[in-house]
Each structure stands twice: as structure tokens, then as C-alpha cells.
Length: 267
Image 1 (cartoon, rainbow, N blue to C red):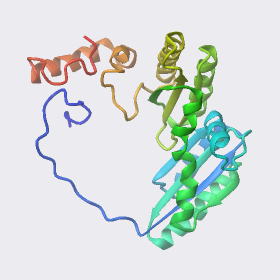
Image 2 (image 1 turned 180 degrees about the vertical axis):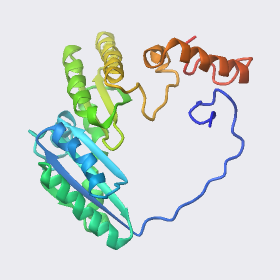
Image 3 (image 1 turned 60 degrees about the vertical axis):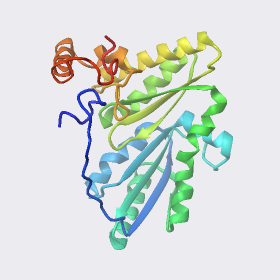
Image 4 (image 1 turned 60 degrees about the horizontal axis):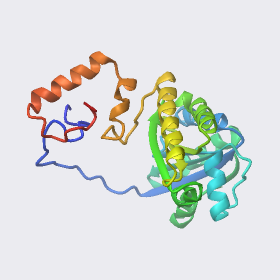
């Protein structure tokens, strides 16, 4: 509906009814390393062809792998181009079948150092790599500019390759990771919050990243929303006609401009 995604700009929700779902009987996670990001991402559509619907498909790029390995020594191959973590859930028998299919797809797709969980404890250890990313990146800077661009799944390898080049161009460390299943990638530029020149370089890298995402058929936010921070970039993501239509809806429902003023629209 109209309210979904409006970020509190069109009204106030006073009541919501939720439907609760039971926890799945079983879960399994499979993790594999790949030589390239293209190899890792090519596995994603193959899961569908294998009649498997994962509940999570996370991918880490080369810089993310290096960051967590140098800080926490998980035993990852630091020369790897990507790490793929895939989880399935459901009934115990189905989960066993699905996790074996996932493992097979990843192995056939060039994955190595494959690990498949058999207990919840093993599953948690496989996900520890992903959880360790944020603390691992702190050594690369005291300020993180975390964006969440989204592109078609098939364009994820190109997105990450070009974002790495953007970081190199602006002399700013960048690590990419995110949801390969829907093309939503978290781009993290690191800099020193006490260095205004470094911050300016990082912000320029963010703008260039948004331009790359749009060029590849995506947009500037997959799940975080626009808010205040991305408001200046809205004209990159939508046409002037679309932007004006959104503003007209805003004026119609909030003529006094009292609901989250300044959000999404910088003026």
C-alpha cells in the first residue's frame, strides 16, 4: 500500500495486526569459497532449477574475506574472490535433501572448502564469519559509510568489480557483502572521521557507486530506505516527473509538512 515505504511522511500508524508463523522444524547452512564473484553468484539461479528455495543467500567479496580473516583467523582462503553462505529451513527430511542439493550446486559451480552444518551449533559457527564483518572493518577506519544498493542478480559481480574500482579511484577502502538472492549489496566505504579530506573522498565514492548501480539497472537503496542521508541523491534514482508526483502525494496528505520534514526530499 501507499503507506509502506513512506518512512512516516504520509501518516501515523496507530495499530497493526501481525500474523505469527511457527519456527521451522529444522535448518541447515552450507558455506563455500569461490575463486571469483561470478562463480559464486552463478550458483544462485541454479538453486531454483534444483527446486531449492533458500531462506538466506549471503555473499562476501575479496576485501570482506581478507578483513575477517586477518582479524579473526577463521581459516578462510585469503586469495578467494568470494564466500557464499546459504541456509534452508523446513521439515527435517526436506531440509536434509535441500542442503545436500545446495552443497552439490556449490561444488559443481566451483566452490571449495565446503562446509555443511549438521547441528545448530555448527550452523552458528558458519554464520560467525558474516557476523564478524562489522568489527573486522574497524581497523580500516573510524567512520563507515554503509550503503545498500540493489541491482539485478545477474549484475552483482559487475557491480562489485566496479565498486572496488570506485574505491581505488577515490583512495578509499571498500568491502562489499550482502544478499545475493535479491541483488541487494551492502557497500561499506571506510575512512577516518577526523580527516575531512578522507571523508570527502568517501562521499564522492558513494555518489559514484549510486551512479553505477543505476547504470546496471538497479537503484540506490534495496532495504535501508532514503531517509535524510540519501535525499540529495533522489534525482539520480527517479525521473523528475516521478519525483514531482511523489511530492504532490506528500502535499495532499500532509499539507502542513509536519510529518518527517526533510525526509526523502531535500527541498
